[in-house]
Length: 321
Ligand SMILES: [Fe+2]
Ligand SMILES: [Fe+2]
Image 1 (cartoon, helix red, strand yellow):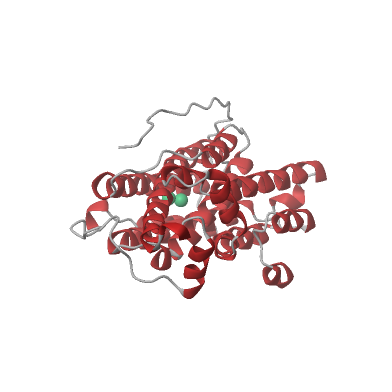
Image 2 (tube, helix red, strand yellow; image 1 turned 90 degrees about the horizontal axis):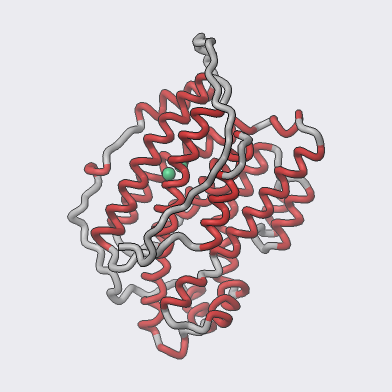
């Protein structure tokens, strides 16, 4: 199925914690845990008979998108190349979702071990189950409906390696629950505009509901903790945010797609880096990450400046916060 099947091995030593205090605390994490139990669904609940006409001609894109096409290296090949690009983008996005979901499953299990209080362990356990379901649902979609899915792209692999190789629970939670999860949630919310079949739209709607809980868990777990850190510790977290953001930007330069479509790499990357549509798309999917960073108190001047330099934050959002 995937053109390069392999594995990723990360060695990390972590502190595994057990506590003997079982009294309920009535915390908001507890409420989230109850909601997670009620919100379980099965991959079989999805209507798998829906057809995915992969590669078929697509309806007209928005005027904004059509002008992006006219400015793209695909323009000289004519309109069918734009539709081909739109399907490849969907295949690539869903493939990267799948690889990210697997990492999210592993991270949730890590958080069960490393987080201190019992209710956080309860919650993270339900998240591991959610993520297993997400791996199941996206891998089935790709196996059954998409001719040639993509392997994990380099920027995502680097980001996952960096998250998984850190032994500190808060750094792992920041990287996964905020940077990866909030981005995925925003991408799922855009599915109606960016994806082209009803099956993937119904899958992302179901998965998106779970991801909203995961982001809330990240925010509840991390809000306020930076106030208690030294400025050096805090600066380290800010740096991590900017490194992840830079890898997210690089991911959306879409190198794998240009290669597959036989587009000159430099021309494709240039288009993805600077075209208004592509910049706006990155800013839109990144806005949820920015919002969550604000909620946990990590959107200080340095982070804002860095995100602005990466063109990931709109001016209106910068002034609003
Ligand atoms: Fe997930
Ligand atoms: Fe998640």
